Structure formats: C-alpha cells, structure tokens
Amino acid sequence: MSFIAIIPLWLAALSLYLGSQRQIIITRALPRPLAGFGAMSLFLLGIVTFSFDYPWVSSMLAALVVFMLSLFTVTISSGYSRGRTLSITGGVCLFSLLFGGASYVA
Image (tube, rainbow, N blue to C red; front, side, top):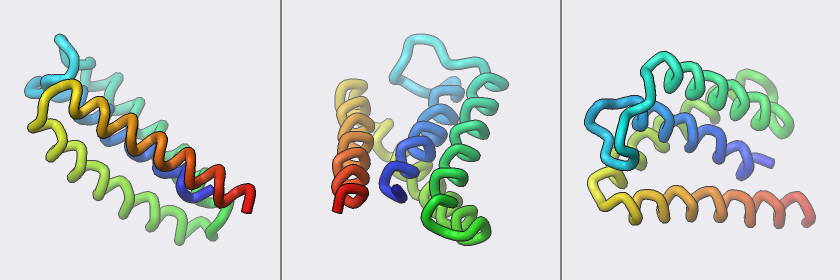
C-alpha cells in the first residue's frame, strides 16, 4: 500500500508546480488557492494511505520525505519538454500502481 501512497504525494507536488506562474506544462497556471488546497488535500490523502501500513507519526514522516523528494523531482523534470514531463509523471504513477498491486497480492 505504501507504493500507492506515493501517487497522491507526487500529484500534490505537481499541483504546487502547476500553481506557479513559471510552469510550462499547461497554458495558464492554476489559481494559487486552488493549487494549495489541492496539494494539501492530496498530502493528507497520502498520510492516510501511509497510515494503513505504519503508525500515524511514521506515516506523517514518510509522507513528508516522499513529498520533499517529489518536489525536487518535479522541479528537475519541469526543465524538460512538456511531453517528457508528462511521461515522467505517468511513469511514476504506473510504477507505483504496478508495485503497489504486486505487493498487495504477494
């Protein structure tokens, strides 16, 4: 389940990036309050998903670490073209779903 918790945290970091005026993925930036609310909601969803496997304090710490890594990775991948950034995001989500499903079944 912890691989699946990476998806909302990655999307939270992407939401914060899309709220920036300097982003290049979409034509107009998301409104900052909407991007902030979406990021906070997705971050809390990531904490709740991590809490299925870990205690609350550990899940909050794990969510914070993964979120910070996601912010760094989204910032680096935004230097590439739009298609490459979207393929990296899709790859992270697919990787998390595949390994999350495999670990759930096993």
